[in-house]
Structure formats: structure tokens, C-alpha cells
Image (cartoon, rainbow, N blue to C red; front, top):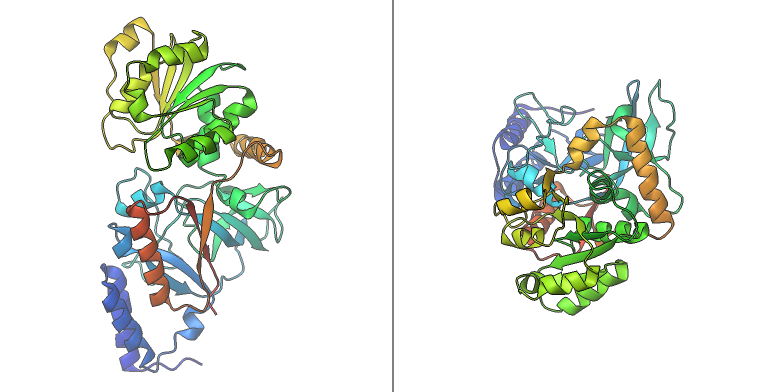
Length: 409
């Protein structure tokens, strides 16, 4: 039985007002204190699950908060309830929260306390385990692993109800939770860029920048598995030799810094490395002048594929590359690929990638897990997630961060 007084109604109104506009964390503490001092009981309403949410775009270190919500009801027909095991924090996730990413999420109506107070759950990628199955579901059962195929699904949560059409089943055999949780975005991006533009054969050459990124490392490994050779460009840094060694262990043929790329002598070195063979494919996630220099290494009828612009600088290419070398430029966005393909094509790609992982030819990223504990308060969990994204924004993490949001106690 839940007791309600006028003071508790006022307390609830203050909570709703907090979600209507961005709240300072001190204000959130004050709200929680006010709620606990009244006779309105939130334990029967909020215990069970938790999500990392925001209700307005902005700096993730200011707008993200933890939000507790009840246990999921039984799933409606053609849907399943899933428990998220791990969910990565990708750069695009941060851009979505900031409001600068093309794909816009929809508010989670199951969490919003009123239509005027929408809540958005962070996260696009993650591994879920089926915990309940609705009527009409074929091919999924309890304890199966699934990944999300719908963009901006809201994976930074302990649990969620999802449509059957928005998930793909992942085989458990031979895969770690971390591999499965990170298989939706970066490995498919690498695989599709290697296969959808240039018709490569064993022994062909590829150049790429951002080679130490998650996509870049996947490119190196998939290319090595196919017999392609890669020239990989990275930013100079402390202990750059260790990074070069790591990328070569993954299968990189050559690893070069951007400073070395700017040297005039590099073109002669590249010609020696390739034996004069044309480089057929270039992959760009940086843009700016380093990409201009990299593009000059491409041979006749080559393809330059851009999938990012980490330098936040425009891409400028000499007209001569188009006239005399017949260069073709493309953009690639994995989200669009998913939207254009059938469920059968998505499943086929997933099976190809999982086979590479099982065979040891495609490793998952270096990672660490950040756990939002079930016994932590929402305020404590909010502090933890805000501190994390602040450090991510300052480049203080060298590993992929995977969120584990536990059920609330």
C-alpha cells in the first residue's frame, strides 16, 4: 500500500520539473532528500531497473543522470524483454547526447513520467540476454543473446522491452560478452568498407588513417585475414613504438606516424613497399591535411572512403587526383547500411564476423567495464557516469569503456 499526502504530491512535482529542465547535481541531491522525508514511497515504483538518461541535449557530464524504474511487465506480442549485459560508450553516443549527430533518438515513453517530460536513454550498441518472450516470437527463447539493429536503441540500461525486428540473435559459442557487445558498429564498418567499394584480391594494398581506433584495428585484422596489405597512419605520441608493435601484431604491414607521412621521402618508401603496385583503397576517419597527403598515395582508379572526421577539419583534395587518377570518393555510415539491408543480410554479416572472432582472426577491443551497482543510489550513480564521460571527453581513457548497469536492489 502506498501512502500519498499533499507534501508527497508536491515532491513528485518537483521531480518532474527537474526532468523538464537540466538540473544541477546539487539540485538532484536536494530533490532526493525531499522525497525521502515525505510519506510518498518510491520503493514500489522505482525499484527493479535503472537507465542512464537525459532529457535535453548538452554536455554529457552535465545532462546525464541515473534513473530507476520498475520491473518490466510481461512483453506484448512480437516483443521480448532483455537484460543488458554490457553496452559500450562510443564517440557517436557522446555526439548524440550533445545534439550534433545526424541520428536523433526517440524518447523512451515507457520511462517518461508524462508526455511533457521526455526521457532519452543513452547508448546505441550493446549485448542483451532474453529474459521473457511475448506471443508470436519465433527463433528466440529465454537466455538467448541478442544485439540491437535499431539505431539509438537506448542500451545504457539494465533492461528493456524491444521488438523482435529490432534485434539479431548472436551465437554464444566462442564469443565473449565484450566481443558480442561491440560487434554492431566497428567490426561491420571495417568489413563493409573493405568489401563494398573496391574489388580487392589477395595481395592488394590499403591505406588508412586513425589506424589505432576500434575501426582501424578491425580493418587491420580483417584485411590480414583476407590477405590484403595495409599501410596504417597514426598520431605521434609517447611510446609510439609500443603502439606500432601492437598494430603489427594484429596484422598491420606498415605503421607510420602523420609526421612521417608529411616527409617527402615517404612516397618513395611506399613505392618500394608495394613494389610499384597501385594502392586501391583508402579509408579516412580523420580528414584535414593528413588525409590530403594520404590520398596522394592512392593509385589509378582508387576509392577513398570517409567514415569520420576526428580532426573536425574539412576534407580537401587536389583536382588532379580526379582528373588524372580517376579517384572516386565515398562516404560510409553503418547506420544507413543497416537501414538499407534486409534482416537476412544483417544476419549474414553477423555470422561472417562471429566466424572471424571464433577463429581468432578478429579480436575485440581493449576494454574495461564500469559497473553501475544495484545498491548505489541514483545520485551516486549519476556522479559516477558524469565523472566517466568527463574523463572520456578529455581523452583520459585509452580503452573502450563498457557499461554494466545492474538491476536496482
